[in-house]
Image (cartoon, rainbow, N blue to C red; front, side, top):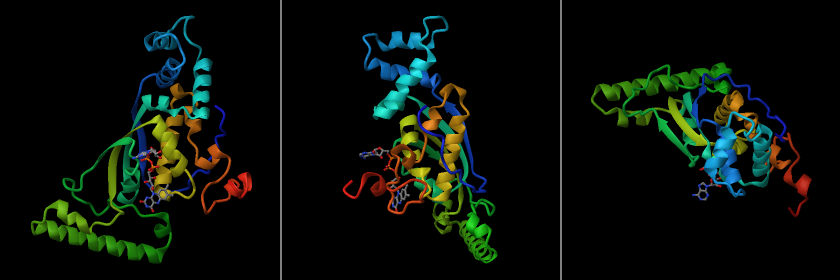
Length: 254
Ligand SMILES: Cc1cc2nc3c(=O)[nH]c(=O)nc-3n(C[C@H](O)[C@H](O)[C@H](O)COP(=O)(O)OP(=O)(O)OC[C@H]3O[C@@H](n4cnc5c(N)ncnc54)[C@H](O)[C@@H]3O)c2cc1C
C-alpha cells in the first residue's frame, strides 16, 4: 500500500470500546472482483471463482492488491462499497454519538433512552474536566442534580422519554454501526484530523486499529488517514502544523 502509516495517536483515557464484530467475508476478493468486472470480458462469477480458487488458477494476491491500489489512487471508490464492517461501540457520550450519526452512508442501532433508564455512573467525563479538580466539582454537581431531577420526574410518573430531557450530552450510550469501506475511508479523512473533536477522533482511531488487525484485509486499513496525509497538505483554516497548508503547497491562487 502506498500511503505512509502516519497519524498522531490520540492520548485519551476514555473507557470507550470499539470492537469489530462482523465483516464481509473475503473482503479483498469482493472489492477486487467488483473492480475487475468493470474492465474484464469475463463475468463476475468466473472472476470470483478465480479470486478464491485454492489451486494454481488463483488470481495472485499481489494482482488483487495492485488493482485496489490503483482504484483507490484514481478515486474509483464505488468498488469499496461492496465490503461492510459492523462495529460494537460502547460507552461513548451522546455528544459523540450525535456527531457519529451525521454520517449518512452507514447503519446505526442505538441504545434507547426511552426504554433504558439513565444510571449515575453512566456519564463520560472529558480529560480536561477529569484533570482539573475545580472543573470536576462543578461537573459532578451538575450530573448529580440532573440525575436526581431525572429520578424525581420518573418517580412521579413522567415517562423516561420525557424525563431524559434533563440529561446532559455526557450520558453514555451504546451503538452498533455498519459502514462500508468507502464511507470509513471518507469519515477517517475528517475524523482522524487533529481538528476533529477528541472523542470521535478516538473512536475512528479505534475503528482503524480494529481493521488493522484483520490479516485478510492485508493492509487496506493503511489507507485510513486524515485528509492531509492523502492530499499532501492541510486544507483546514487552522492547521495543526503537521502538514504544510494548501497555500504553501499550491500557492495563493489554488
Ligand atoms: C471538524 C468538524 C466540525 C464540524 N462542525 C459542525 C458544525 O459546527 N455544525 C454541523 O452541523 N456539523 C458539523 N460537522 C459535521 C459535518 O458538517 C458533517 O455533517 C459530517 O461530518 C458528515 O460528513 P459528510 O456530510 O461529509 O458525509 P457523510 O454523511 O459521511 O457522507 C459521505 C459523503 O457522501 C456524500 N454525500 C452524502 N450525502 C449526500 C447528499 N445528500 N448529497 C450529496 N452528497 C452526499 C458526500 O460526498 C459526503 O462527504 C463538523 C464536522 C467536522 C469533521
